[in-house]
Length: 400
Image (tube, rainbow, N blue to C red):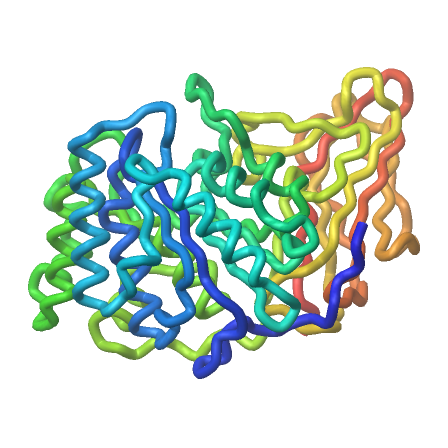
């Protein structure tokens, strides 16, 4: 495993964006939300003064199934945003018409990456196209790539949907993985699967009534979907602010009023989902646990008594060195038969703890742990023969 270079606190300080931006999204099957999210994301970048940092944008990236009418609707959104916000047309690739160009563009963007010029790759669709682009790139350059996601569906976890790859394939390729909270919580006002009601549209009427033509265009594209949802655009907001809690009020301030907030100096907490750790030793994915974060977690493999998850702490909008209270959310099958240990760079931090009697998820808090960007964070588990364990996440809460 390759050691990391010096940390960055940004990538954006409100004036200068350190690095470049790439985007991959669907919109041609399953969910129309990208018809709105794509132009809203482009509006966020333009309003924040970072649109010149965009070096790649692919769309309609569901390959095994598609709806030609949806492909056209999404392209209307893309082309309209290009015209209104002044993007370079050659950066945009329709995967249904020219997949190879999209893959080559991803590889080229990765190959131009370095410690001083990283690539922030937002994954707003399934993993197949990003994975193929990464596989065509120089492996030595991938550690300078930060893949950002918020959606378990995009990450490849939906029963009955034939994804070829999930995020584990991307993570194992050598990139850095950044998972933020589900952005539907702040940027969708109705459920998936049906047209939204007038009441659900009400929080967005400012778009319809805006004096700004480009904002009214965003309203039209959202109305075309039938649903008040631009949730994937929350990842664009996070990238330029460090704020995982995008909402409608914040969005309006940026794209209509032209008042982007000052980026966070450092995030108050960073949640490292267990399934995103680079190394899963004797641990395997468990899908559809309704009580787990993103409904995903890891569990000891069948028959394994010991396991370890480990990964680098390399997150945007964090301090190069800080003190954290660390929460580990875990469970055991029967209780009382497993012990857990937290370590940083191979050195134990805090005291090991044993599970307590009783099933279900529990949290262990270990206070005042110093972590530097690039440190290896790990949790080790050892269980008796009659017990097994799972881990949901490791959360670093900034010590004030």
